[in-house]
Amino acid sequence: MAGIFSGEIEGLVALAAQNVEVEVRLTHARVGGVSFLQSYPVQQTPAGGWRVMLHDLYATSPRALAVVFHVEDVPELGKVRLGEVRVEADVVSEAGIEHRTTVMPVLANLDGEDHVEPTVEQTFLRFQVARAREEAVRRADRGDFDAAAARLRDAAAGLAAFPAAPGNAEEIEDLEAEASRMEQRRYDASDRKYQGARAMAARDLKAQYAQRVSRRPRAR
Image 1: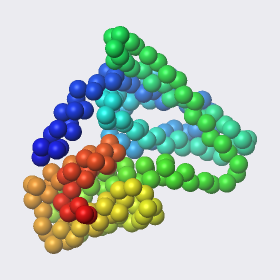
Image 2: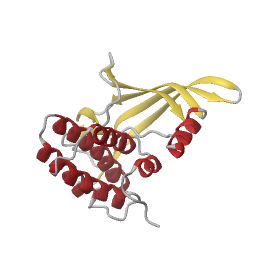
Image 3: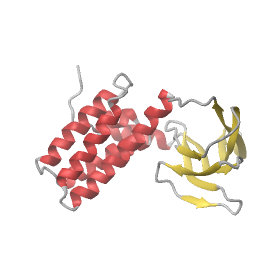
């Protein structure tokens, strides 16, 4: 517990930016919309985009925002600009607080083939793990333990495509073990909190936090 709290307190004193907002805009006629894979608050903008509220950002806790662009058949090949991401924040520095805006284009290099970017794919799988744990809790709360276990095993199977990725082996082992607990009807308030903590760690990409709260003994 001391290690968990010390890490969280350290993060609280490393405030990097406040009032962080991310706006996603579409710039290509063949983009039908976007999906957000996390549960951040999202608002539709008058211009037809989306604004995501990330609030405060800490230097020791970077955040990832997963956005899927739904693109219909695009006739042209090469680099195609699908949209842009606009980040606004009150940035904290030694000189004080400065409001900054950064605009980044979203480009797709289309060549008529499907490609998988391993880093992006692994990150999306982590978000799916978070959603699987949250859904498993909802199903277990309703008494549907077999469905909860199946959801956790599906998430483990997805991670198995990248067995060498850092932290994946431990996450797979934990998901399988928790699925077994569900199948054995071993579920109480502490299990619910554990799944919530692990879901938060996966959603926020906090690998060290996941290790600290893990029920699995650490390898020596």
